[in-house]
Every structure is written in C-alpha cells, then in structure tokens.
Image (cartoon, rainbow, N blue to C red; front, side, top):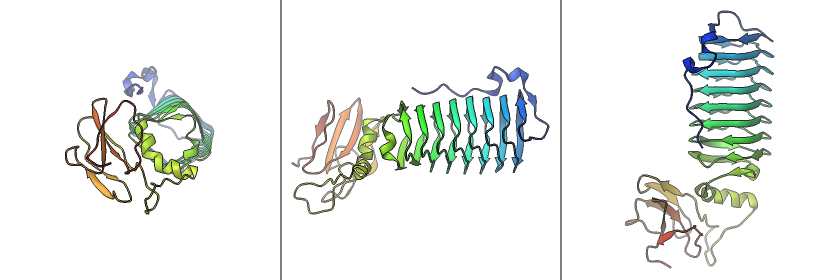
Length: 297
C-alpha cells in the first residue's frame, strides 16, 4: 500500500505558528515553530540540537555536523544535504519531499514514522540505523549502505534501489514488492524477513544461487552454468520490448512480442504478458499460467 501524498506547507497543523528563521544555527540549540527558507548552511556545528514542528524549504546543508540532533515533526522540501554528518540523529513524524542526500552520514540514526517522497539518496551511509514505519515513495537509492541496520515495517513503493548494501541487516515486515527497481550489491542473505514479488525473485535467482553456492547447469550442456532466468519483464500495458539473456545455445535475444520471439515462452497472467527465458531441459513452475512454446522440446 502506497503512502499518502506529500503535504503542502500550508497544510501543516503548525503552519500558522511558523516564523522565519533569521538567526545563526548553534550547537545544542532549540528550534521550534521556525521556517528555514532559501538559505544555506556551510560547515555549521549544530550537533545536539532539537528541531520541533519546523519547516525547511529550499535549504542547502553543505558538510556540517548535526550529530545526535533530534528532528520531531519536521517538514523538508527541496533540501540538499551534501556531505552532511547526521550520525546518531533521531527523526520522528517527519516528511521529506524532493530532498537530495549526497554522501550524507546517517550511521546509528533512529527514524520512526518518517516518509520520503521523490528523494534521491546517493552514497548515503545508513549503517546500524534503526528504521521503523518508514516509507520511501518514488525515491532513488543509489549505493546506500544499510549494513547492520534494523528495518521494521519499511516500504519502497515506486522506488529504485541501485546497488544497495544490506550486509548483516535485520528485517521485519519489509515490503519490497512495489519497488520499481531492485539491485542489491551485497547482503542478499539478510533479506530474511522481507517480502518480494515473484518477478523480483526470478530476477534475483542467479545472485541467490551464487550466495547459496548452487551450481545451476543443464544436463548434457557443455557450456558454463546456465543462467536460468536473467531477466523477467512484466509489461502492464502491452508487450515487453527489452533485452533478455540466456546462455549456452540460447545466447542473447530480443523480446518484441510472442509472434516473433523464439527461445523461450510467454506466460499470460493477470492480463499482462511476461517474457520468460528458459533452458531446453528446465521449465520453472508458474501458478495458473498458460504457456505458449515456439515448437521446441
């Protein structure tokens, strides 16, 4: 289930209390009912500060230290955090929309009831972080390190995880089914406790086999171990048109529709066509599917 849409500034319950921030951010400061707008903070030491019922609009945080700060009921819109140190910070009941985090440090941070909309995470360190009731909606997470993190009731609707790291992470009720893309660089074995879709499972099959130490090879095939399913393409609105790859005698093929494609089968399910690569001697199971085969056995 997708999270609700992001709120506008005027819709915040404390919007009428907000006053423009005009001072200087200091260490262990207290900031309540403030609106930080069209400003930048560079190399600021704001560690141990408390931000409550405040809003950030078009703000840039360049480097700086905000360790052990608390963010309670905070609203962020078009905020950029570049090389910012947010280690061991606490976030509650907060909302981030179109926020960019590049090289941001979030190790040991705690987040509860936080939603990210259309945000970009690039090379973010979230090791040992604790995320509970967190949603990443239509976000891009590239090279994000969740090593040793604890994720509870975390969802990724419409988001793309590109080269994510989950080494030694612990997951409970983590739902990855609605993710637009799922590329895991390391820590596949830590996915215990997560829920993925059938398509995602088939797409990750080669990597999972490698993690488990499985050798997948067709009987009588002299080629290297066969990648049974390297790519599964689901097209909701029509026929898929993407490159799929087998191995052995199958090689690379294009899937442009069932009438012209050979070297596999097409499965019809829930009104959409799915392009599935299969080897000669192996056929995967598919619940209640009707399969058209192009004349080979």
